[in-house]
Length: 136
Image 1 (tube, one colour):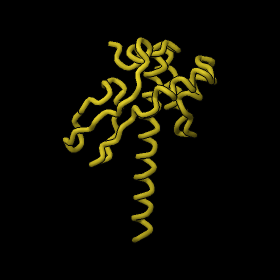
Image 2 (cartoon, rainbow, N blue to C red; image 1 turned 180 degrees about the horizontal axis):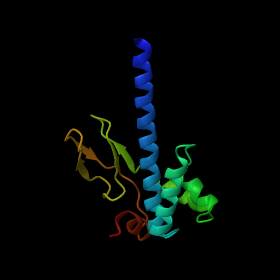
Image 3 (cartoon, helix red, strand yellow; image 1 turned 90 degrees about the vertical axis):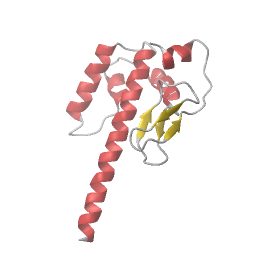
Image 4 (tube, rainbow, N blue to C red; image 1 turned 180 degrees about the vertical axis):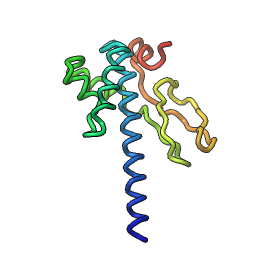
Protein backbone atom coordinates (compact mmCIF):
# COMPACT_ATOMS: atom_id res chain seq x y z
CA UNK A 1 0.00 0.00 0.00
CA UNK A 2 2.82 2.40 0.83
CA UNK A 3 4.48 1.55 -2.47
CA UNK A 4 1.32 2.46 -4.36
CA UNK A 5 1.15 5.80 -2.63
CA UNK A 6 4.79 6.51 -3.36
CA UNK A 7 4.36 5.52 -6.99
CA UNK A 8 1.32 7.78 -7.34
CA UNK A 9 3.14 10.61 -5.61
CA UNK A 10 6.16 10.12 -7.84
CA UNK A 11 4.09 10.21 -11.02
CA UNK A 12 2.21 13.30 -9.80
CA UNK A 13 5.53 15.03 -9.12
CA UNK A 14 6.80 13.99 -12.56
CA UNK A 15 3.69 15.40 -14.24
CA UNK A 16 4.02 18.67 -12.30
CA UNK A 17 7.72 18.92 -13.19
CA UNK A 18 6.91 18.30 -16.87
CA UNK A 19 4.16 20.95 -16.77
CA UNK A 20 6.61 23.47 -15.26
CA UNK A 21 9.18 22.70 -17.96
CA UNK A 22 6.57 23.11 -20.70
CA UNK A 23 5.41 26.40 -19.17
CA UNK A 24 8.98 27.67 -18.98
CA UNK A 25 9.54 26.66 -22.62
CA UNK A 26 6.37 28.52 -23.64
CA UNK A 27 7.70 31.64 -21.90
CA UNK A 28 11.08 31.13 -23.58
CA UNK A 29 9.36 31.03 -26.98
CA UNK A 30 7.30 34.16 -26.33
CA UNK A 31 10.40 36.11 -25.35
CA UNK A 32 12.31 34.82 -28.41
CA UNK A 33 9.52 36.11 -30.66
CA UNK A 34 9.33 39.45 -28.82
CA UNK A 35 13.06 39.90 -29.30
CA UNK A 36 12.56 39.20 -33.03
CA UNK A 37 14.91 36.20 -32.94
CA UNK A 38 12.29 34.12 -34.77
CA UNK A 39 8.74 34.37 -36.07
CA UNK A 40 5.50 33.06 -34.56
CA UNK A 41 5.40 30.41 -37.30
CA UNK A 42 8.94 29.25 -36.50
CA UNK A 43 8.01 29.07 -32.81
CA UNK A 44 4.94 26.98 -33.63
CA UNK A 45 7.09 24.63 -35.73
CA UNK A 46 9.54 24.23 -32.83
CA UNK A 47 6.73 23.58 -30.33
CA UNK A 48 5.19 20.99 -32.66
CA UNK A 49 8.56 19.28 -33.02
CA UNK A 50 9.08 19.38 -29.26
CA UNK A 51 5.72 17.65 -28.66
CA UNK A 52 6.55 14.98 -31.24
CA UNK A 53 9.86 14.10 -29.63
CA UNK A 54 8.78 14.62 -26.00
CA UNK A 55 7.39 11.09 -25.77
CA UNK A 56 10.90 9.77 -26.42
CA UNK A 57 12.97 12.33 -24.51
CA UNK A 58 12.50 15.80 -23.12
CA UNK A 59 14.29 18.38 -25.22
CA UNK A 60 14.28 22.04 -24.21
CA UNK A 61 12.80 24.50 -26.68
CA UNK A 62 16.01 26.55 -26.87
CA UNK A 63 17.96 23.42 -27.80
CA UNK A 64 15.52 22.67 -30.60
CA UNK A 65 15.74 26.23 -31.90
CA UNK A 66 19.53 26.11 -31.83
CA UNK A 67 19.70 22.71 -33.58
CA UNK A 68 17.46 24.10 -36.32
CA UNK A 69 19.78 27.11 -36.67
CA UNK A 70 17.09 29.61 -35.66
CA UNK A 71 18.96 31.09 -32.69
CA UNK A 72 22.53 31.18 -31.38
CA UNK A 73 23.85 30.28 -27.92
CA UNK A 74 24.30 34.02 -27.27
CA UNK A 75 20.62 34.60 -28.08
CA UNK A 76 19.66 31.73 -25.77
CA UNK A 77 21.55 33.42 -22.92
CA UNK A 78 19.79 36.72 -23.67
CA UNK A 79 16.37 35.06 -23.63
CA UNK A 80 17.17 33.29 -20.37
CA UNK A 81 18.25 36.58 -18.78
CA UNK A 82 14.86 38.05 -19.68
CA UNK A 83 13.09 34.92 -18.47
CA UNK A 84 14.62 35.06 -14.98
CA UNK A 85 12.07 36.03 -12.37
CA UNK A 86 9.11 35.98 -14.74
CA UNK A 87 7.69 32.68 -13.57
CA UNK A 88 5.91 33.14 -10.26
CA UNK A 89 4.23 30.58 -8.02
CA UNK A 90 1.27 31.35 -5.77
CA UNK A 91 2.57 31.05 -2.20
CA UNK A 92 -0.75 29.55 -1.08
CA UNK A 93 -1.57 26.88 -3.70
CA UNK A 94 1.65 26.70 -5.78
CA UNK A 95 -0.15 27.54 -9.05
CA UNK A 96 2.38 28.71 -11.64
CA UNK A 97 2.04 31.99 -13.54
CA UNK A 98 3.85 33.61 -16.43
CA UNK A 99 3.99 37.28 -15.40
CA UNK A 100 5.99 38.51 -18.40
CA UNK A 101 3.06 40.69 -19.50
CA UNK A 102 2.55 42.39 -16.12
CA UNK A 103 4.34 45.48 -14.91
CA UNK A 104 6.70 44.98 -11.96
CA UNK A 105 4.85 45.21 -8.66
CA UNK A 106 1.41 44.51 -10.16
CA UNK A 107 -0.98 42.41 -8.08
CA UNK A 108 -2.77 39.64 -9.97
CA UNK A 109 -5.39 37.24 -8.59
CA UNK A 110 -4.53 33.56 -8.37
CA UNK A 111 -7.03 31.54 -10.39
CA UNK A 112 -6.44 28.57 -8.11
CA UNK A 113 -7.21 30.10 -4.71
CA UNK A 114 -8.07 33.77 -5.30
CA UNK A 115 -5.16 35.20 -3.31
CA UNK A 116 -3.25 38.18 -4.72
CA UNK A 117 0.18 37.48 -6.21
CA UNK A 118 2.66 40.33 -6.55
CA UNK A 119 4.78 40.33 -9.68
CA UNK A 120 8.48 40.69 -8.88
CA UNK A 121 10.28 43.99 -9.12
CA UNK A 122 12.89 44.02 -11.85
CA UNK A 123 15.05 46.58 -13.52
CA UNK A 124 13.75 47.43 -16.97
CA UNK A 125 16.02 48.66 -19.72
CA UNK A 126 14.12 51.58 -21.29
CA UNK A 127 12.99 50.81 -24.81
CA UNK A 128 14.15 47.23 -25.10
CA UNK A 129 12.52 45.68 -22.02
CA UNK A 130 9.36 47.74 -22.40
CA UNK A 131 9.00 46.34 -25.92
CA UNK A 132 9.79 42.78 -24.78
CA UNK A 133 7.55 42.72 -21.74
CA UNK A 134 4.67 45.00 -22.57
CA UNK A 135 4.36 45.20 -26.36
CA UNK A 136 0.82 44.80 -27.61
